[in-house]
Length: 213
Image (cartoon, rainbow, N blue to C red):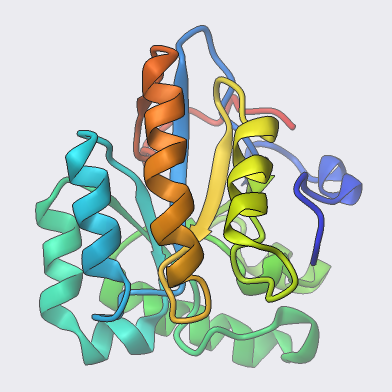
């Protein structure tokens, strides 16, 4: 996926179950990080966030939580929210509904969160139907494309700044593929919006289902 905004067809899904942004009157941005935790990236992301007193939501791969439980606990202890990103980082378009449900629930047992982001943003209608009452799908309004080899760190920053507005859900990644770009773009993104009076909040699992696309 090379787009920054979410696909149009997500507009067809009920915001009670699926969220792309959380608009409101406050200057708030919801930073999110996918694919961790891993020691090569997550601690550095945490340090950058701490330097700006920013909190975020980390959508974690269950197998990484299993391998790095201390790092998982560190993310929580520093005040960040946790979300489910499946146990094996499954592509929903290539996975049967039964296997996908089992994998999501296996991750859920470790992370204890009802927030769920499907890897690659890919899921089928059946998977959505099976999961929607247990998990709240959190997608995005801004995809930085930090994982894309064809996009520079500078372009990631431009993507993030130009598309963000109050209530935006912004996707970065704490993985090996993205760490160099995040190292460049994240502090500059935080500095830019801090200077405009924004704060950076985690997504609340109990947040009312009033968000809209």
